[in-house]
Amino acid sequence: MFTAAFWKSTGERAVRTGAQVLAATLGLDTVGVVSADWGDGLSLAAGAALLAVLTGIAASGGGAEGPGLTETVRDRQ
Image (tube, rainbow, N blue to C red; front, side, top):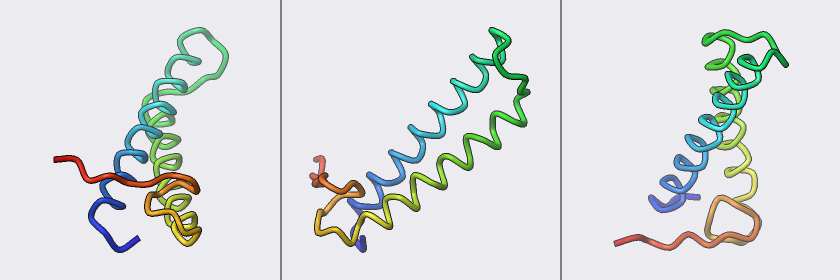
């Protein structure tokens, strides 16, 4: 958890998760499944990104080097 590679991977996962939630929220609003504006979508996306970071931190004690339970972070050059 105390490596740059861990935080880079965790940050990437948080951004990806937030973007997925934002796209899903606004997409569901477009087809009328939910009623959500940009503010609601961004709020949900930020919450999901925070949960992704917290999940990475919680999973870091499991012995794996990455933010996931079975994931190993590889430094990209």
